[in-house]
Length: 390
Image 1 (cartoon, rainbow, N blue to C red):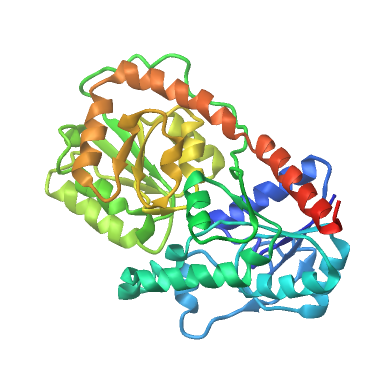
Image 2 (cartoon, helix red, strand yellow):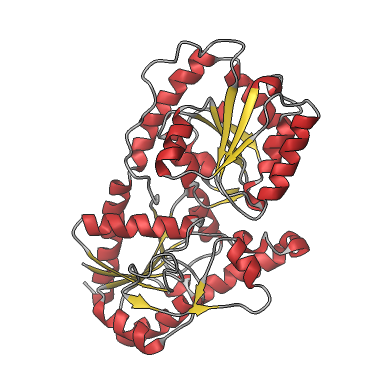
């Protein structure tokens, strides 16, 4: 099968959308399919460029905001885009933006089948717009525009979580909707089989990690505020693994907790590679995920794969809580007291926590990316057959 991925920038880092696209394309190739990429340039490795190279598009005035959120946009090149579409059996859109809209017009002219993945909510964008982020009408307008210009013109739309599926159903998307996780790479759990000797030592630091971008929608301040309510605050060593536009704010707030003697250990901030994140998760006592806007949440899924018990925010625009297998692993978004209660619950129960970690290792096998690829290929084939009238 010849599959064309359409994405503004396939190579940008610090962006879960692009990271997911790279993994999916890689595993489609491993499964024997011919995958090509239509994208903006790879600025970090001039030797590795998309098959169909578009130029960057720089937004006047707001480009620093766009870049801070880990996004880059491409300019349309209609002759090149048509060449790419003519090559493909199926065109897969990774975003609902301008180049995807242009590609849909080309595909309609050529009679080519198109599918898409819903990777981000409007709130992922408006959350960086100051007071405008509280204007619900703006988010509804954006999603209606995405529906009208992109999703309604696709044969199928991949919904990574039940939360996304429910939301798109409420907007009466005309494309068929498929519930397919983006999946996680089947990494082996490197956690020790049995707890370390000092696991129940009442004097040792308790490692609570937050893995992911430091940005408003990830809501790290709720974790910091929860430290004021946790009876274990003096023993907790917070570790934030990630970068993002709010990094300085989070550092300042966390240092204040340390200076006020709420925390006895100064919080740690790092940016880890894949192996580093695996080791961090495998050695942690808890992994907290407070995001209020999250389509799926790859970072916490990969952490669970390493046997750490998660505590996940449950909210209207976050689908991550569906991966929780115990009610004590969920708390209402933006509620630091409830989060502190969940943290204390699990830290009170070291043996139960260790056993629960292994249950999460087994649970994440359901979301092996190879299973997701099988489902995606089936979706692609249905789109091709239906376009041909088979």
